[in-house]
Image 1 (cartoon, helix red, strand yellow):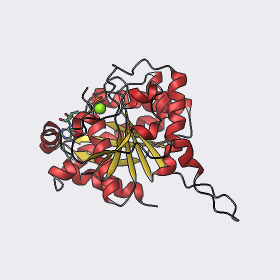
Image 2 (cartoon, rainbow, N blue to C red; image 1 turned 180 degrees about the vertical axis):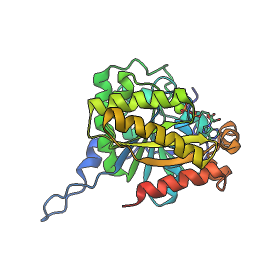
Image 3 (cartoon, rainbow, N blue to C red; image 1 turned 90 degrees about the horizontal axis):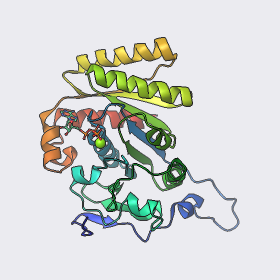
Image 4 (cartoon, protein in one colour; image 1 turned 120 degrees about the vertical axis):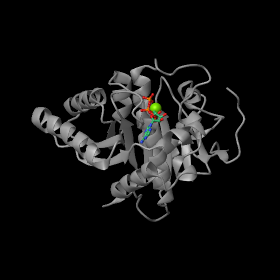
Length: 282
Ligand SMILES: Nc1ncnc2c1ncn2[C@@H]1O[C@H](COP(=O)(O)OP(=O)(O)OP(=O)(O)O)[C@@H](O)[C@H]1O
Ligand SMILES: [Mg+2]
């Protein structure tokens, strides 16, 4: 992996560590104020290839466009590819963090075209899929500390329900579960929700229906999943939103350019903007 940094991308190397960030400045003569911590949102799916990475990038971008200080974290340990979708050649990545060479926030870089920060997951030294769970737990805690520096952190998770995915998801305040209209994607989303709800019953789970043929069809898909959750799990996850199937998504990924730059008025882009808007609503 090359270490060149393309234009528009700046490393945040000299920033304080996550631990320092969480402490916040203390003013003489005043009691210490607990720093307001940003919200950590994980994007999960069950089945792979349903649009988690596309959605994570676009959601982070949409939040940044609304004046939010946002960080996009590539938590797909096996097949990290945020760097590819954004056309980045990261100088630092999660591999350096896991190797103990960098703190988490030292691995963050500014993605200037989008106005948000990114921690890339790709590791020059190979897959991160076999990181011990104890190391992942520490990473989750570091992420929670890093949230003190941001309004929002969006965590793009790997597909599936493996322990490593669930361990990282534990750090999140909100889990956005992405499904498509396909039955296999629905059953896998249900499996993810079931395990998460059993392990941590109070988790704030919301559903995103992606690549839907129409808003109506997306609503039907949501209702199917919602009824299964209500009937069998006794939980009622709300709908975060529906993103319509849109040829521009593929085109933007092929061009390694975020949809909110290349096709901001496309249906899929507007649907994600609407989700960001709702997530920010009090
Ligand atoms: N709204 C959409 N409309 C049309 N195509 C879409 C949409 N969302 C995603 N796609 C297509 O789905 C493909 C997979 O998207 P993406 O890489 O974001 O999925 P993923 O869930 O992150 O996959 P993985 O599980 O492998 O990490 C994209 O290449 C894109 O072509
Ligand atoms: Mg992905």
